Image 1 (cartoon, one colour):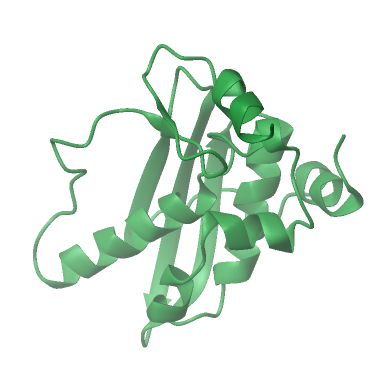
Image 2 (cartoon, one colour):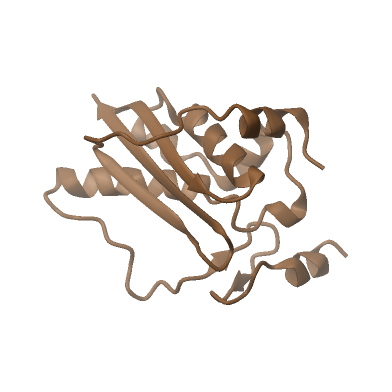
Length: 161
């Protein structure tokens, strides 16, 4: 089911933890989906000097978080904002389609941490937009499932036909 790269990042995740004096923190996820990711970043001279994560979720979610942290470390903020959920799947050499949904939110959590940092630099606090509903968005089939949906199995099944 999982390839060697995914299994390596799941069984030996890199950069697990939090940064007590983080410059930015970003969280994403949906308890109904079962995956919640939180990224902590330390920035020096516009470079991500340190990246840590805490993830509650399946093996794929842990592997995704680990890979995102590895991809982001040492990058400029602008370069890190170019990391996408799709590029993470590519770096992991693939994920099963049913695991694309919700477990692949790592890039989103990283982006929120960067946005949090940028807002703090302006003296503001980053807040998730109020009009943004709590849904899981599947990067494969572009379907948003409401909170109560366990995952988008039916939507992904439709998209693979």
